[in-house]
Image (cartoon, one colour):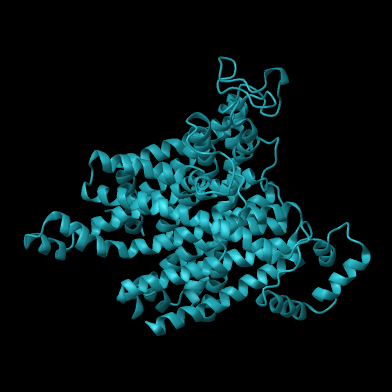
Length: 287
Length: 306
């Protein structure tokens, strides 16, 4: 047992060592860290309340008082971008957890039992994947109706097939391995084999996918809010902010600039971090 | 090859069946009386009853589904409650537009992506390689709708090179296609680069070089041909995703595409339109994927004998 543990620690140390040397992963990790901190500390660091405006100061450019300027209702854009991090992080976490749990369970059972169960699960995933990208999320919203909770559900369900496929793929290759044979021969139950042997060994692709999916979910969720199908104004959600900034694009372009920059950097952070994780967790994939 | 195509076609059937069931279920899952949803809340009771009869909402579900599918297969998607036009006419106009837009976008994306990918691979770690990979990172990280707004601002408002509104002519499509193609260009560039790098390291390329072939011939004739195989899949996938993702670009530039039609349908509770758009987009996407797989199998014989 102690041997097993020390082997695990060296493995983790090795991953950490590789991750530290990966410049892209460090930049990505720092962006993600800043994003999480901003989201957590929003009430402490935002200079103004995000929903209160001063109509006398509408559509003003960046200044000492309002670093990023004000929007059409005279609200401080910096404060709204800061609070936007809070909403986005909540959506991302909730949606990715839904997808991670459902997708992993479906992938585990499909991959392990094979046959009819597997066929049924995978055809179901194929049907979900027949709606390209954000279109699936829009179709789900068409049934559930717009709003924050439904947005989370839509972004979550829409990510289930990705996790299911990845987990299934790694289970299929793992279940033929000797240590699984050994566990089965020593009389371990299916549940025990699945959760004690197969799941822990498919963690690497799952972790990578989680980081990359955080990026996709943010793009999708802010896109849906931009379309008016997600978080509704006056809430300070980045996509919704961009949609209300559209009429003032020519007269006050700064209003549409900063929420977009925020989305881009956070997405970039998760992408860089996910790519870095892939290089460190699975060095074979590196070119 | 024909066996492979038939096998893939057979796999299409359950997926399309599922798509039709989901689209059919839409009307039944939305709270409210489906006859009222389809006829419109302000319709007179006689018309609502007529719709109930016409769609068979008074019949059991499986009868309703069969009738629905029968209509769809005959190209009858019902009547839009807002425009009072047959949905199939709306779908046709809007879909052709989205198809045109997506074609322009994939063309731009392939051109930029392939050129950037090939140069990056042949000059790995050069300034060009680094810059284009950073560009690709921005490409996949920028939200399409924000990029669209920026392009409008830069090329339409500041430089005045291209029109900001309108949808009739080809020049109206340049900015939207650029916005829509940016992410795909990034994906294609990355994929081309990775694939080229892998091929360049293989033995047959070393042999070609050792035989004294010119570098240009080695790269463009031997390496590129083999490196393109995995990239073909990306073309197909990206094109398919464009059909679904077009809604964002169409909204930014106020273009009359199928995605916009569907979102307007959701807002106006025009469910016949939503249903039709879902079926049409999903079917097209599935068919595009099938064609991509066939093309892939055609170029890479290993797949066929799997």
